[in-house]
Length: 370
Ligand SMILES: NC(=O)C1=CN([C@@H]2O[C@H](COP(=O)(O)OP(=O)(O)OC[C@H]3O[C@@H](n4cnc5c(N)ncnc54)[C@H](O)[C@@H]3O)[C@@H](O)[C@H]2O)C=CC1
Ligand SMILES: O=C(O)CCC(=O)C(=O)O
Image 1 (cartoon, rainbow, N blue to C red):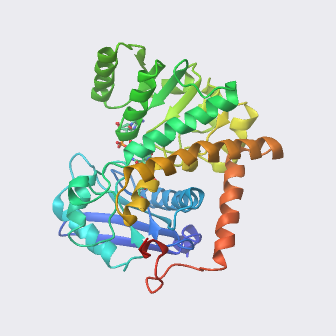
Image 2 (cartoon, rainbow, N blue to C red; image 1 turned 90 degrees about the vertical axis):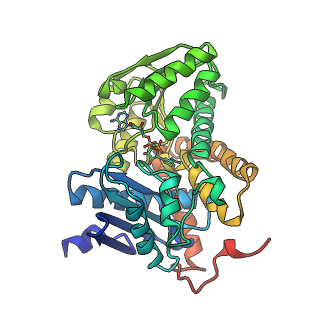
């Protein structure tokens, strides 16, 4: 019964085991009240089965909240593949995953997350239509990290507005953890606006590339920081764009910033306790699933036919949503996470009256021709 206790909040969890291709994956479907589940696929060399399952469960729950907050007609799901993205990827592995996804009959759509790229899903797409975020040359909307990074920038602007009464981003100092698909783009935009950066990435080539970019535009205010030292950096905003669970008792103790705004999913190790701890320390926290919804906005919009303009217009709403959440938190004396969760849970509860959970017999709203 332990496993059922562990997944008690989830509608369905699928364990995929294909010895022929080496695929070992977990698909977690958290909640489909708002529509079929969606959520990217992460590939990571998890040290244990429990670590992989926990990641899938936490990430898929986060997607339910992210979908409701962004007001898209999807529910929360996520896939994790147990493996090293640098060594274990093959076309057959992703085709095998595609077959498992197809067996869910439209209850779950997936695309990229950490460790996977749009190109990987071109293979999966040969087996199922339930793939989003594929490259533009294959008819998809392309790289979803572009709107995700833009959403983080809107989040930083809204946060600066609350901190200083101005949404200007260029005069500040930022500590960025992770210069991957999202973090690098955020760093580039901040540098272009004249900001100073502290950056850390386990991949030193990414730091070198950013320094090269900075030199090219005449802003060399980039200092590399080793590992966990990024938590102790004195800066205006800490921008986590790598792994989740990094805002913990230990890191909060060290944080020397006015705000935390980044793309990483599930930043708070313990949502409620660490949300409260940040508030108690006077650090403004931008709830991750509000700020990093740009990619979701793009992939869910893809089902209407790609439109970059529509995606960017929808992504702008992150600015106003975040200001609303900051205001609710202030007015009610609660953490920003609690304020965001109340908003989302009320929205899901209201929708339950029309839709208890998604089954493919019901026509999804986004299939309606406009
Ligand atoms: N790509 C997207 O559109 C979205 C991404 N996210 C989240 O944002 C985060 C980043 O995503 P991507 O940029 O797509 O992933 P990515 O895999 O392209 O980049 C992650 C970067 O973090 C670095 N990294 C890993 N561990 C680190 C550590 N301990 N310290 C410093 N750097 C470290 C990696 O070397 C890599 O450069 C993830 O948590 C992801 O779930 C959330 C929403 C959408
Ligand atoms: O739904 C997707 O495929 C991409 C969005 C996602 O996984 C996320 O926002 O974490």
